[in-house]
Image 1 (cartoon, one colour):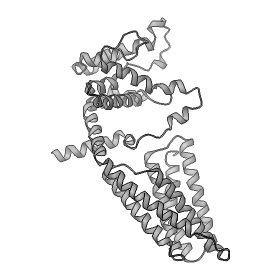
Image 2 (tube, one colour):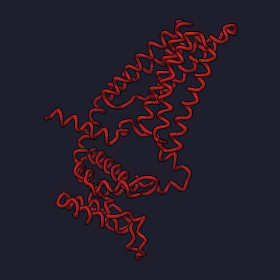
Image 3 (tube, one colour):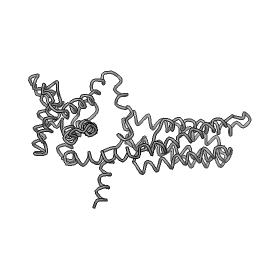
Image 4 (cartoon, one colour):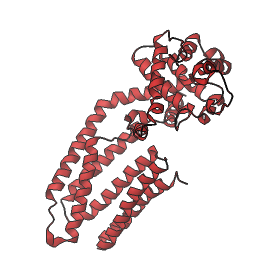
Length: 359
């Protein structure tokens, strides 16, 4: 249930927005404030629980943004009835929401720019001042400048969204093409039942061998393609470089130092990959896999592709080194580029659509 509670709290904010509007229209201002406080608490609580229980999701983040947008528009409707200045804020926010929805449904990426975050803060400050003016009319709360600044930020945000769209239109198409090409390249490998078992193989810290190898494989694919290397062999070698037979953490057998997992698993991965995938494991792929643990296994990479996998694997495993320092949580939860938020499920859906069109 922990997976669903934060999203249910977020969804409750959407359901309570009509209640806020009704209370405002019927002049139950203090009741409206009480409901608004409850909504604000759920906004704080859903994020807190999601992070505490480690159930942060892309869907939850999008639902949270939608809930904020629906609530803001609902409150603006109430303020328009009392102060016509908020009409412009409302119209501009509707334009921004429409453009964001269009961009998302077209590209499956939610726009999130820094200027948009500042704009959101100013909208809620303006809304707060607007309601303070309603509650305490005798104090003549000055809101004009905040409304002007908010409208200015909304216009800048809209221009930034449009500019971002046209500047990145080709990049987004290319990124999708990369994801599709990558998935079609590794499809027969990643859907094999033996490979899927790696979802239950622990890797370094709080991740599976499956997660680690897919990430390394895709990085190898992108970088290899950019520098005109054998990116197809790189993608497969990156996917299978840790394709050893069983989790080493559960092996209690005492072995000589040079026969321990770090020194032998690259060779074991090659043997196991050949056993499962046969002739799909070319000598080039085997060489890239075999040398990825250099300098631990003393087998020097002989090709640019082998060196690239060796370096990417080391870089990806840096979280293991950094974990004893309390920077681990920052490192693991760092922001990633929007295009890398694409999950394997989204890639698969896109591939299925493309295949359906071809048929």
